[in-house]
Image (cartoon, rainbow, N blue to C red):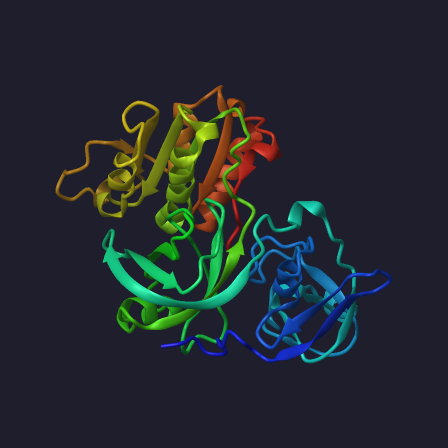
Length: 351
C-alpha cells in the first residue's frame, strides 16, 4: 500500500527562486515550496506546515503553482488581492520566482528532511483510541527527539503530520508514532482499519522546532494531551539517552478526559531514573467519566494542574508541550503569564 502521489523518485517540477537574491532550489512534483527549500538546507519560515498559521506567506512573481489549500482561513481577502499564498501549500508547476520570504537561521533544519519508503512493522494499541505504529525504512534517517514527519497515506490527497515517539538510534531504521484515531478522519481510518504489517507508505521528515535542547542547564517539564504523548515520550527518551542530561529532573504531565485516555507511565517506567529523576503527573478533566471509580489521581485541565504544581517556579524550567490546539494555547498562555521566556517554550502548533 503506497500513498497517493507518494513515489519517492517523483519527477522534477521546476526551480524556485527568491526575487533579488541568490537563493534558488529544485522542487519535485510532490514537494511544496517550503519543504523543498528546507531539503535544500535553507531557513524557510514555517510553523504548522499544514496551512493554518500563515508563517510562510509569499507573493508569486513569475510562474504557476498548484494551491493545495485554496480556502485557508489565514489568507485574507487582502492577501488574495496581492497574490499572496502559503509556501507550505504551494506546489510549483514549473520554474517560479517568489518574493516576501525572509530566510532566517532559526529555520535552517538541524537534520535535513527527506522522503523515502517505510514498511509497517506493527500497530500496537496504547489506549482505546491511540495506537503505536512502527515503520521501518531501508536506509536510516536521523531526527531529533520531539520532531514530526509527514506521512503519505493511500486515498488521502495530502500528507498528514504525526510526531515520532521514539528516538533515532542509527543504524536503526524504525520510526514509531503514537497516533490517535480521529472519528471520521480519512487518514486515521486507513491507518487503523486498512493498513496491515508489510504495507508501505512514504514518510517525509523530520520537521518541527520543538526538539530537545540538550545544552539547556534547566530541569525539564513535558506536558502532553491526547496524542501529544508521542513527541513528549520522544523528549523523555532523548533525555534518558543524552550524556549531557544525565541526572536532570523530568516532570511529565499527562492529561485526558477520562482514565482510559491516560497513558505514558508504562513507557516512562522503563527509563533510567524512573521514580528518582522522572516524575509522572496524570490528571483527568471530567470527573463524571470516572464511572467505575478507578481513578484516584488528580482532577482538572492539565494546564491548571501544571500551574498548581509549579506555581512560582515556572521560569526555572525548560518547557515542552503538545496536544490539541486548545490545550497548547492554554499552556502557552499560562507560561506567558508566569513570565517564562519564549526561548524556554518548545511546541509545534497544529491546526
